[in-house]
Structure formats: structure tokens, C-alpha cells
Length: 216
Image (cartoon, rainbow, N blue to C red):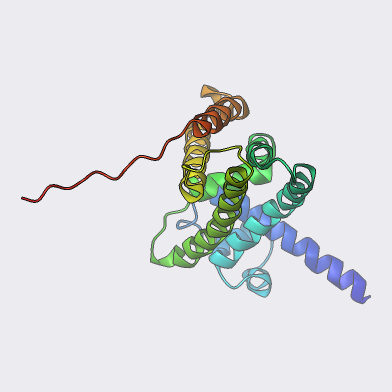
């Protein structure tokens, strides 16, 4: 009986996450109440509060649900390309891009983050959660770029942190414009060409000195 209750609770949680994903994509996070999530799920508001404290908690759960299968694949890539940092960077980035392009949960989450969430006081916990998750990703990417520098795949003039930030900027920009008008281009194809060019460019990078400010 306890097992059945646990399975039912898990099914209810998934039902609520599916409903939240749908209404967040349709109406935006700020314009959606937990009551509306409950109605969309065909459940009571009490059921929502049993599983989630607030909308930030719901969004964190949506992030985790979409991220877990991707994280498992990224770990496999880390092992497969342990001696090839640039290959790790490329394949991990393209794995995430392809998931966004082809899988509903990953695409919906990215749409919510980039297009459907107004970062105001109400959603400040959401922003903080995303910043923390991004910092973790940035730290890992910076480490991969540093590894590429250490083994000679990239010149020592490359700043690993700046290189990772540049990759994130390309990633976010490509996703944003694709989500705005998916019919305009193939996301995976664009990403493959862009990231290949970016990595090739870093191979010939030279450090640029900061501009000298003349005294008045």
C-alpha cells in the first residue's frame, strides 16, 4: 500500500510539472498563478502546495527534470573524450543543443527561461537558482577550456573563463532567436557551424591588451 501511495504521489507531481510547463509556456511565469497550474492539471491548489512551495520551486523542479538525462549524457562524454578537451566541449554543447531542438521538455524549459519569465521581485528566487546553475556550468566549461590550453589544443593566450563566456553567449543567442522563430533556421545545423568556427578561431587567438586611457 505504501508503494502505491508513493507511486501515486510521483504521478501527481509529474502531472503538476506537465501542467506548469504548459501554462508557463502559454501565459508566462509572472502571469500564471499556482491555482491556474492546479486547474490545468485537474487537481486542487492544495495538491500543488503539497509538492511545491511556490512558482520558484516549480521552475526548479522543471529544470531538474529536463537536466537529469542531459547530465547523464554529459558524464558519458567526459569519459569518452577524457584525453580530448576540445572534443568534450564541442560534443557536450552540441548534445544540449540537439536536446533543445528535438525534445519537448528541454525546448519548453529553454523557452520559459529565455522568453516566458519576467525577472522581477516575485521571480527573484528563480533568477538566483538559474544563476547558480549557470555558474556551475560555467565553472565546468572553463575547466574544459583550461584543459585544452594545458594540453596544447589552444594557445596559452586564451583566457579559459572568457572563452567559456563566449561560448555561452553564442549558445544563448542561437537558442533565443530560434525560439522566437523556429522556422527561420535549423538550430542544430547553425550551432554546429558556429561552434566549429568559434573553436577554430580560439586556436589562432592572441591576447589583446587593454586600451590605455590617456590622462586628461
